[in-house]
Image 1: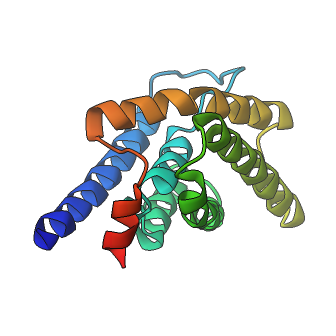
Image 2: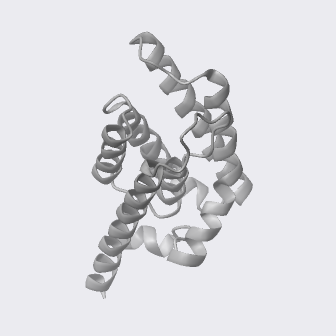
Length: 176
């Protein structure tokens, strides 16, 4: 029985990695040739935060670092900046997972929203300190608002399609 749980954990880690690779691929597709005046959500950020709080075992720090570092390289962002920020944010979510297990969804959503705002501010602050080329503040805020707005949808789809639900007390005991 422990082998089944272990293999399921590795299967879901593979699913997470494949979803992230699919999202990176979708961002690389040349669907628009003109600059956009609006910013859509960053699905990888929302997916990582949702899975980190609901099933922390599915999003280990090395996996988060790997997929976000790959995204940094392929999307021509400052290498390692988004990866480092997301590892930190996902670790915060992982540490809060036990406390949020019995909380309402609104509390989970608020926690994720605060983290998304802190991710944006951290990215902006570090980018400003190191004189990195940054998108406009309006676009970054628009993307953060979109991330917060789609969080419930990502959680719902993760639950319905992949069975990613909140960890129970039994899951927490089984991890030790």
